[in-house]
Amino acid sequence: MVGIHEFRDFQRQVRLYNRKCFWPKLDSTIVIISSIVLTYLFKRFKAIIVIGVMLMYEEHVLKVIINSKYLVAFTGAGISAESGIPTFRGKDGLWSKYDPTKLASPWGFQENPKLVWEWYKWRMSMIMNAKPNPAHYTLALLEKMHILKSIITQNIDGLHQKAGSLNVIEIHGNIWKVKCTVCNYRSRLIEPPESVPPHCPKCGAILRPDVVWFGEPLPEDEWSRAIGEASRCDVMLVIGTSGVVMPAALIPNIAKSKGAIIVEINPETTPISEIADIKVPEPAGVFFSKIKSLLRTFQ
Ligand code: OAD
Ligand code: ZN
Image 1 (cartoon, rainbow, N blue to C red):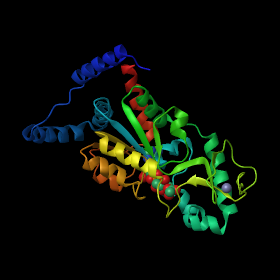
Image 2: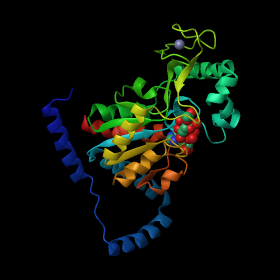
Image 3: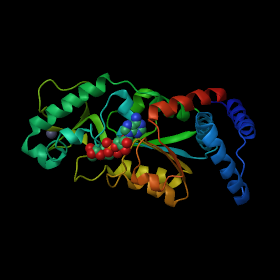
Image 4: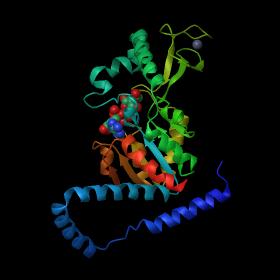
């Protein structure tokens, strides 16, 4: 727990940092003059300026983070990419090799539960051996510092919790949770099941992964908590999601409509880039390891 003295000390450090990190409100004349000067300087000293701008960039995002009143993160598969877990879309994505209608839908499961379970067993082994990366750890640190209030994640890999995050809202479920296809039995696995499909110890029917598949509604509790957090935050970090899967993709839009600042961290352009106030086109692990080093000055 952080005591009141540490909290006051933290507030004092934020004030000092704000003074140190000069980020002037520019009027239009200054913007035009600076653009001309910057264009000239850019042509002459390209490399130096790129490095300078990138440093300011991190400092700017850090400033937005530490000055936030209610910071929330919304994460997708991209945040776990540097932990070795493949994303879904893109040329090396899972959906370019596997058919989601066969492996991630209720009708696919009905048709061939063994095949679906084999696929989940493979993913479980991969996830079991995966370690969180600096992006997961930095979010956990920000929560410990009482800056980040919650993480809304579409990921089922549990890497946020492995990194130490406590307030994680899993809107697509968790790969280690199972539920019975007939009765109300629910449980949590600690390793991939030996034989598949596993059976319910209560009624003998087939168990299924307690994750959200295509065509299924999101868990009510998690979804309403996610909407609550999105409506309440003043800054939202949107990390590693393609922003195309509904209704999850509505989360940044809800935050934006309530006036939140949207910071997107994703090397690619997505539909969320259009509403983002700040776009960081870098891999999440790379970017957050820099943020984590800057944060050390506050600890
Ligand atoms: P996607 O695979 O659709 O998108 C991953 C995003 O991460 C892409 O926009 C990449 O550009 C970005 N990315 C890749 N590497 C990154 C890195 N190192 N740092 C930051 N970003 C990176 O994954 P999601 O948006 O999470 O649903 O997909 C949403 C849902 O679609 C998943 O939860 C899953 C899937 O079908 C269900 O299974 C229901
Ligand atoms: Zn049962």
